Amino acid sequence: MTDNSAPIEFAPIALERDTYDNLVKLAGETPSGTEIVGVCLGLAEFLCLKNQAYGDSALAPLRIFAKDLPTDALIRCRLDDKINRILKGHAAGEDVVIDIMGYLALIIVARERQQG
Image (cartoon, rainbow, N blue to C red; front, side):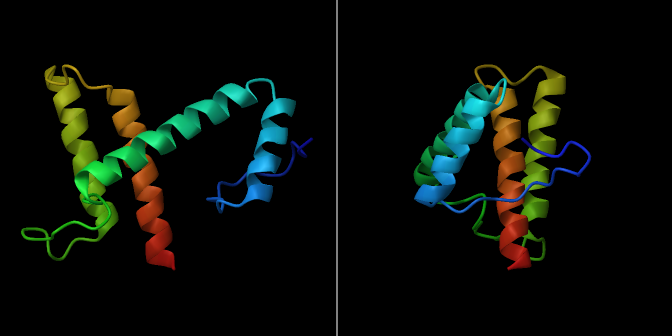
Protein backbone atom coordinates (compact mmCIF):
# COMPACT_ATOMS: atom_id res chain seq x y z
CA MET A 1 0.00 0.00 0.00
CA THR A 2 1.25 3.48 -0.84
CA ASP A 3 1.61 6.21 1.78
CA ASN A 4 -1.25 8.55 0.79
CA SER A 5 0.45 11.59 2.33
CA ALA A 6 3.50 11.35 0.07
CA PRO A 7 3.25 12.85 -3.43
CA ILE A 8 3.02 10.29 -6.21
CA GLU A 9 5.44 11.11 -8.99
CA PHE A 10 5.57 9.82 -12.55
CA ALA A 11 8.69 8.14 -13.84
CA PRO A 12 9.10 6.02 -16.97
CA ILE A 13 9.94 2.42 -16.15
CA ALA A 14 12.51 0.20 -17.75
CA LEU A 15 11.31 -2.88 -19.59
CA GLU A 16 12.67 -5.53 -17.25
CA ARG A 17 11.07 -8.73 -15.98
CA ASP A 18 11.07 -7.59 -12.33
CA THR A 19 9.36 -4.33 -13.26
CA TYR A 20 6.68 -6.21 -15.17
CA ASP A 21 6.11 -8.64 -12.30
CA ASN A 22 5.84 -5.76 -9.81
CA LEU A 23 3.39 -3.94 -12.09
CA VAL A 24 1.20 -7.03 -12.44
CA LYS A 25 1.22 -7.45 -8.64
CA LEU A 26 0.38 -3.77 -8.05
CA ALA A 27 -2.40 -3.90 -10.65
CA GLY A 28 -3.94 -6.86 -8.87
CA GLU A 29 -3.87 -4.99 -5.56
CA THR A 30 -5.40 -1.79 -6.94
CA PRO A 31 -9.18 -1.32 -7.44
CA SER A 32 -8.98 -0.52 -11.19
CA GLY A 33 -5.38 -1.59 -11.63
CA THR A 34 -5.76 -4.29 -14.25
CA GLU A 35 -7.91 -2.00 -16.41
CA ILE A 36 -5.43 0.88 -16.04
CA VAL A 37 -2.51 -1.36 -16.98
CA GLY A 38 -4.48 -2.79 -19.89
CA VAL A 39 -5.19 0.69 -21.28
CA CYS A 40 -1.56 1.77 -20.84
CA LEU A 41 -0.22 -1.39 -22.49
CA GLY A 42 -2.71 -0.97 -25.33
CA LEU A 43 -1.50 2.59 -25.81
CA ALA A 44 2.11 1.37 -25.78
CA GLU A 45 1.32 -1.22 -28.45
CA PHE A 46 -0.53 1.41 -30.55
CA LEU A 47 2.44 3.80 -30.34
CA CYS A 48 4.96 1.09 -31.21
CA LEU A 49 2.90 0.05 -34.26
CA LYS A 50 2.59 3.68 -35.40
CA ASN A 51 6.33 4.13 -34.78
CA GLN A 52 7.03 1.16 -37.07
CA ALA A 53 4.61 2.38 -39.71
CA TYR A 54 5.82 5.99 -39.78
CA GLY A 55 9.53 5.46 -39.17
CA ASP A 56 9.85 7.29 -35.83
CA SER A 57 8.71 10.52 -37.48
CA ALA A 58 7.37 12.07 -34.26
CA LEU A 59 10.56 11.55 -32.24
CA ALA A 60 13.09 11.83 -35.07
CA PRO A 61 11.49 14.26 -37.56
CA LEU A 62 13.12 15.24 -40.86
CA ARG A 63 13.31 18.91 -39.77
CA ILE A 64 13.02 20.29 -43.28
CA PHE A 65 10.92 23.30 -42.23
CA ALA A 66 11.26 23.18 -38.42
CA LYS A 67 14.99 22.99 -38.02
CA ASP A 68 15.30 24.97 -34.80
CA LEU A 69 12.41 23.59 -32.73
CA PRO A 70 12.94 20.97 -30.05
CA THR A 71 11.19 17.65 -30.67
CA ASP A 72 8.69 18.14 -27.86
CA ALA A 73 7.64 21.48 -29.38
CA LEU A 74 6.99 19.78 -32.72
CA ILE A 75 4.82 17.18 -30.97
CA ARG A 76 2.92 19.95 -29.17
CA CYS A 77 2.22 21.45 -32.62
CA ARG A 78 0.73 18.12 -33.68
CA LEU A 79 -1.44 18.23 -30.56
CA ASP A 80 -2.60 21.73 -31.49
CA ASP A 81 -3.51 20.46 -34.97
CA LYS A 82 -5.40 17.52 -33.48
CA ILE A 83 -7.38 19.77 -31.13
CA ASN A 84 -8.10 22.16 -33.99
CA ARG A 85 -9.55 19.30 -36.06
CA ILE A 86 -11.70 18.26 -33.10
CA LEU A 87 -13.03 21.78 -32.60
CA LYS A 88 -13.78 22.16 -36.30
CA GLY A 89 -15.47 18.73 -36.48
CA HIS A 90 -12.91 17.24 -38.87
CA ALA A 91 -11.71 14.33 -36.74
CA ALA A 92 -13.92 11.77 -38.47
CA GLY A 93 -12.72 8.20 -38.14
CA GLU A 94 -10.01 9.08 -35.64
CA ASP A 95 -9.96 8.05 -31.99
CA VAL A 96 -9.02 11.48 -30.75
CA VAL A 97 -8.61 10.45 -27.11
CA ILE A 98 -6.07 7.76 -28.03
CA ASP A 99 -4.30 10.13 -30.43
CA ILE A 100 -4.02 12.82 -27.75
CA MET A 101 -2.84 10.30 -25.15
CA GLY A 102 -0.27 9.07 -27.66
CA TYR A 103 1.07 12.54 -28.38
CA LEU A 104 1.30 13.26 -24.65
CA ALA A 105 3.24 10.02 -24.13
CA LEU A 106 5.58 10.98 -26.99
CA ILE A 107 6.21 14.36 -25.33
CA ILE A 108 7.32 12.47 -22.21
CA VAL A 109 9.66 10.29 -24.31
CA ALA A 110 11.10 13.38 -26.04
CA ARG A 111 11.55 15.15 -22.69
CA GLU A 112 13.29 12.10 -21.18
CA ARG A 113 15.66 11.93 -24.17
CA GLN A 114 16.43 15.62 -23.89
CA GLN A 115 17.21 15.31 -20.17
CA GLY A 116 19.51 12.39 -20.90
